[in-house]
Length: 339
Image (cartoon, rainbow, N blue to C red; front, side, top):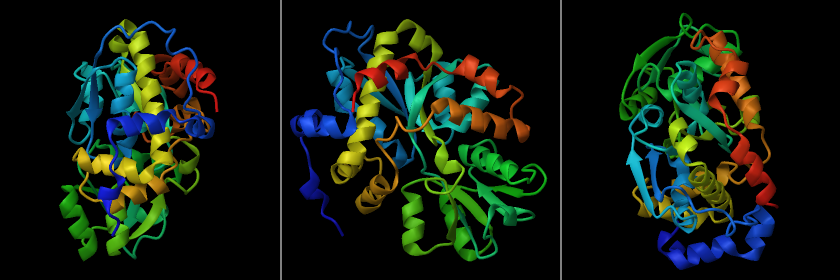
């Protein structure tokens, strides 16, 4: 077992690491003209927090947000799919999480805008020996935390892609996470989808096997899994605060790639997870720091098509992109954060 005590870092050490010339050259952390920018319109920022460790960039960004002038940062815990509702209602301002449920909210006319991609991968489908591929799920029992939960939405999109009807070809059951793990081990369900750190735990304990890993399996590995999104009214009123927050999150994303052990320790310190070794494994497995390499609009288009085919949205991909994306900050940051 690794010793997380050796990976502690103070606020000063963290900010020093983030500003080292070598880091800037390697990961594009240098931003030109930050000091010449206007200050943020508000110093208060409410970040929607889920139970998944893959949101790591959001937590690593906390000190970076303060350097951007966002001195009043609050993480608001949102169980299940609460992140999407909290951004739509204005309870929270910005977050990072799985893209497909955002598309459902945009299709429903909710005031959410996607700003850019965070990382590829983090969701895995675990199954019993009865399931070797997505098509094997026909007639099988699949557990989700709730109908309409992110795992249900993502798997429905996947099933549609391979020619199955998610409404007719699969028997959906709802169970809490701990029950789903137990039921899979007992062979009483056939499959379920999960995110870190549970993915690392199941693989370590050899419970079921990985059927699909969207970090490495095509076509899912070619698109962002999690994206940065914000409340539309917050963006309208606070464009500079939005840009500065987005920049801090992207730098946090890069720091996860650069310093996986210390970033994992930060997650433990913040109570996001108790499993340090699993957190380190996640940091090293997920392609953090590669937000430049994928096209967020391609991601929105891809998942919009899948969800439309599944009958979960009515809007065309073009309409979703027109109504629910704002790439201007991403375009500016790509120019400023030179590699």
